[in-house]
Length: 94
Image (cartoon, rainbow, N blue to C red; front, top):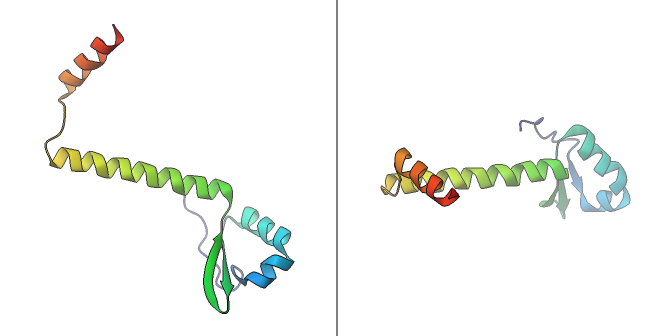
């Protein structure tokens, strides 16, 4: 999921510029793969991100949370041995 780093000159824009040039800025996001940081009164207020990139981030976060839960379960001893898991699955198929 590696994308180019944020270009501080090209990718940070005032929200007023976004209002005036939203189609061009959305095209920039799609083509560059980089987000645009929107500012209001000189402060960062929002991020415009390509939908595929956003979905990839959400999916990756879900996977990382699942991994963390699995590690926590293993650390707590809440695991099922392979043979027992196989038996449970096979019994469930009958």
